Amino acid sequence: MILLLFNIIVKYLLKYIAPRYDLEYNYYMFRIWGKVLIGEKIVKQITYERDDKFVYSQFFKYLSDICEGLDIATPILMKTHIFNYAKFGTVKFLPRDFAEPPEFDKLVIENIRV
Image (tube, rainbow, N blue to C red; front, side, top):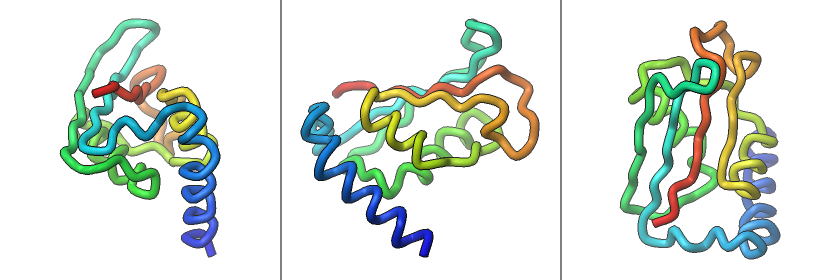
C-alpha cells in the first residue's frame, strides 16, 4: 500500500511538477550538496554525485548515502520533503525529522545543477 502510494507520488512529480520547474536537466548525472548546520555555520558537508539519471523513487537511497557520508542518522523522509526538493531544489531536515535527537540544528540537502 505504501509502495503504491509512493509510486503515485513519483509519477505525479514527473508528470506535473518536473516539467514546470525544469528538473529534466540531470538526465546523465546529478550532484546533491548535503550540509549539516549548527546555527548558520556549516559543520560538515558532502557532495553526492552519481553518473546515472536522478529518480525520485530512489531519493531515500540518495539521502541515506549522504547521511552515511556525513556520519549522521538518516532522517524520516516524508512526501513533503520530496515535494520541496522537486519544487525548490532544496530540502531542510530539522531535529523533529529524526528518530533520535541530533547534535545539530538542521540538515540541508540542495541540488547542484550540472
